[in-house]
Image (cartoon, rainbow, N blue to C red; front, side, top):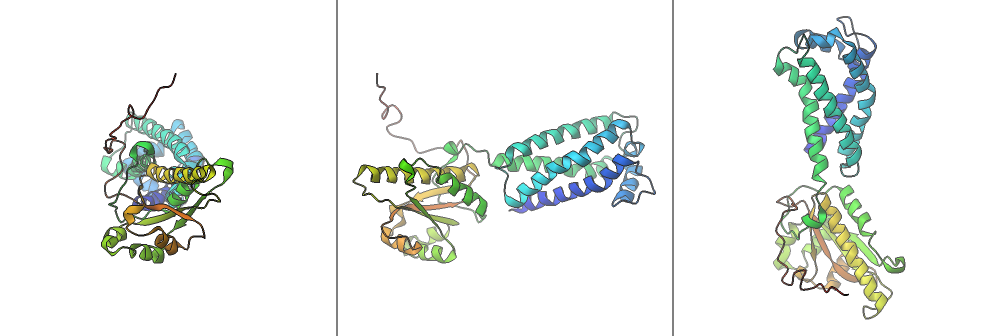
Length: 321
């Protein structure tokens, strides 16, 4: 959860409060000087000075407010949950549907307001109250779309990361994607080891020449192969390939959420046995690699230049009759 998540969560609580106090009261009866519901006196004072049409309560406005009070509250709750749990990607479809409906409602509402016989007075004050709804819409769309990268194009090997922490939920989603990799007879030959502070320290200490670079990596995942077969056997090769697919799934899932990664093997400058010992890997497991990951210092992009493939597609494709 970052500062924007917290800000959006606060706005949703404000919107829900307005739904269940002022708007519900307005739906049932006009807001007057005698109205004693929470925030009603303040609403009456503000509208007297800046929005007299609201107090006039035409039927279209009453119906719109009733709909907002009881229907839009559900949308605010969904966005609140996404902000608190980093569930933007998972809840993308219902959130975009709600934001579309909300933006349509705002456009309709303001059009009717400004074309009425009593348009709002004092635009600064008016949009000071209405502005949070528009700002929230923009920020929510930004949050949702940030997780809509095409991971096949955005994934690159990255070694420079920012200090922003990767949410545990993003790691969990990536691991869940990893275990969906194809594997013959459901052998599930992969094993994953997340690294806490102590394990990270041990891994960073395996090669003093590369300690500085390693310590700049926010998160580590050690992946091993646990197969009953030798790599010289067909089933052993299949298990190895399946685990490689799992690693790719893991990195693609991260990339879809703007998280960068790098698959490290020999470049760690440490023996496989030393890495396995750091994480307490089981007997017979073979190191597939260490996955560095975190938010990149420069945001991932689908337009990032990839290293040129020397052979290209034409050099590796044979069209068989």
